[in-house]
Image: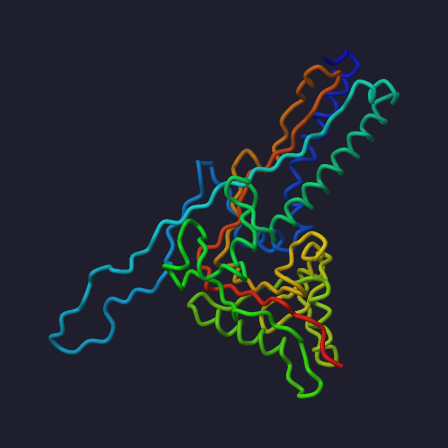
Length: 338
């Protein structure tokens, strides 16, 4: 239960939180490189539903082709488009105010200061959850983002399922991957640029799939340092938009390459040992958010059997790819040999 004093402060904090939550999506997305790019291009707000559905083409149409005069043209629709689906990811961060908080802090200014600190804590914690989960497996019963270890798992990408469709059945529903770890980025004994060659191979491979070139590459801080080693004495090319947003970035061909500190060994977000690179064609991705739950604030709610209240900061969303083969992964990049 709450006292009259806390009820006054609850109303004050609810008004303040409501004002802040309207800006939270932009604030958080600007801190997450992938969200930052998608917020500019393909963020979609939908009414809801039990799941997110899209009609996709997990294989090529083998009907038809060249024909001569009088030929019978096959039109069996033996390679149809298919429905794919993704579950919603649900995230919440509680913000709690106990009666002692009101009693031990005199005046509206001090209560607002507590409220601001708690909201900042919720925002930063939620940003970390989203950023880390983006690179993990997630999805399914976990109600998390269907992250990169689900979308492009180096060990299972030829046999697993994505969007409910089997990659063992649909080979063109797989991301582009060499099938093995890269190893050294450069060997001074033979002068081979292994990292640059692999980036070039993956880039060209996904650029020939009919949807244009990759436009975003995400890697770890160490990964971008490796790339920087190989291009340091060459012309530096930066992407101004992401640089203005505070991301450490370079460009590879027409793709901006960004270092994401949440892609690391500590959080378990790398694939295998050493460094990982993800290449995205963002035309094939959507960041889908459920209307009315874009950092919706629920509360204040009485805490059962406690003297205090809570607010819940909610967001329902999912990141989905509708054409896997237009994206690539490079794993196991390690430092150059001496």
